[in-house]
Image (cartoon, rainbow, N blue to C red; front, side, top):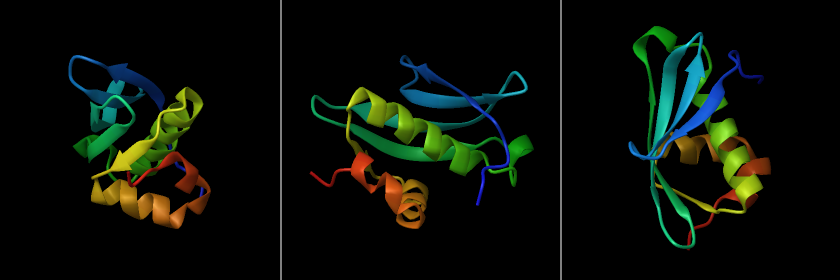
Length: 98
């Protein structure tokens, strides 16, 4: 299923989160913790006004694409992201359990 919304992904390093911006607003974010050898994705949150528009899936895709391009493996502590990767096995290579 295609995502329903286009997001601009930006990183808020001070807030330790990737933000998905749509229409000039933060539509959602993925909170993280960077380690030496990986990044731990802790929590995904969609802003109330953007619920039901595919923001969670668009964020998952954008964050994992960025980390894959960086060569940084992701550890998924976020249940939403775990479920999303289970449904999109083409992203399994971006995730590590180590």
